[in-house]
Length: 423
Image (cartoon, rainbow, N blue to C red; front, side, top):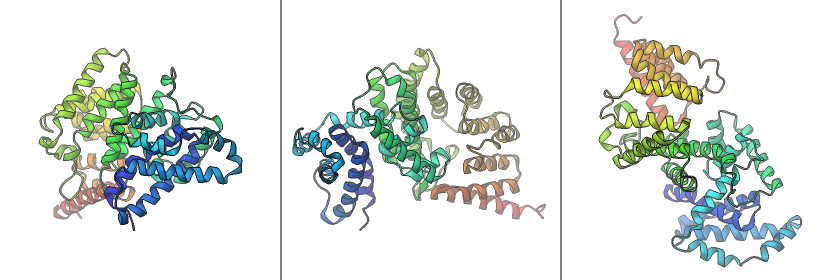
């Protein structure tokens, strides 16, 4: 029997916490991950029939620890490690500690796991991939889509990263004095985790709230660790300002509602106020502007506009120009093109989009086709808009996005049929 949605969400949220607890106690990252996956599978099979345990996290730790112990005992090559593990406190002490109300290790374990996955022995792409897999709980296919690479390539990258972590004997302790070496990758991983939650790359749902909540929680934890870092504060502000719109992003049927059509009364004003205060303080006090601070500033301009028509598009264009100088990337250019279209006209936006046609990172991405279709619609070229929306719909694996794009295409097709000049 397949686990219900609530159980799946709970297991997804608990997985990195359970993995962190096991790695902290036993080491052996790769073996611990296998044991946790077995425990999650056992839970998805048993809980629908037997009911959830009173403490799901402690239950998962217990089962995973038993699986790991069995594996260590059956593996002759790991007998010395088993002896080391056996010399430590018994399993029941770990489970009791995990079950304590307000157990301080729960958050710390996940944060430690996050920094361990960003070990300097790994290449930045491998650090990101491993973090998204172990901490974010993303599937290999989801990570591959985030990196715009084939799934087998990503599977190999993650496998090699695990092997390297094992070979390096990476410590589970937070790296004192080494935060700066790993921080860029940690923040990038949290950013990608949040994005996957805010706009799920595949499946029937538009959003995965569990991922956005966990990304925000971990970013707060990193900020507690590094309270003076402007980019950490910028990323937290960006998440808060973006997630504040979550309730208005989908209609009653779960369909996508674009920013310009959203009911702004449904936006979370408390999150907006916190995000605006945070980015305002950060911009005033930081000596170096980074990409997360600039993206947060753009999000603040959107969130402070009482209506879509009142949006300060010239300010957004100026911020995107600065962002591209600080950290050029194709998604920033994509959004920059929309802002330029709102200020200068759709043709100027289309000209800017044309500079992405030879960029292999985004040339075949459905969002490029969707934005181009939108700008063609603004020019009145309904035939080009129709073709673009259909092309974008074929490229996405998100059901809500696909429905939205097909609806836009149908609208273009209907308008063309009513045009007496249409052949």
